[in-house]
Image (cartoon, rainbow, N blue to C red; front, top):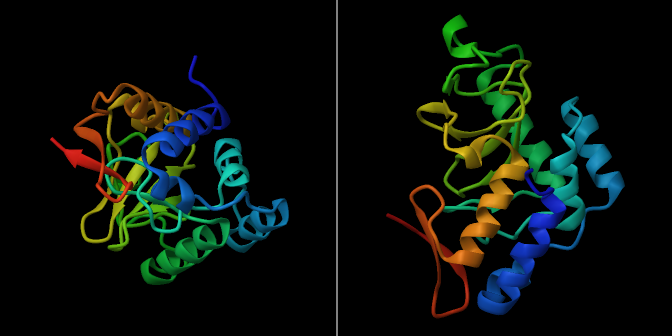
Length: 196
């Protein structure tokens, strides 16, 4: 059984405190429940429980890469702002450019969909999203590329937010790669990921 996000966060925090103190110090304090509720109201979507768990542990990571290979976590407010910006760019009513791009079972998606919740960013316009479209893969993680649209990987770590956090924690603890990404720590004490 996959550990909860809270359980994985405890493992990640322990490892960061011991090995990557700069990244550990960049973890934001917990989000206020009211901030999460305000973000949900702003986008008109309820956050999945694992995302709420994460935000109640750390309301973002201040542009420090926590998730492999270069993803920093967004705060509740940043989630709402990012979602609104993407919807404005894509079009208020746009759910998918073409029917085949809007297939919730496909490994590829449109440029943006209103039923995606961004929760991490790379600082270059790309986001990790939780796919809330109904279907057998609801809750999976996708990489919304600002140029090429969204891709949903089949590697187990992309199956859900708990799976992603568990895979991250396990990689940090063991030093083994997660997918194609190896954890490393810079001389400055920051977590980084090597793409092998």
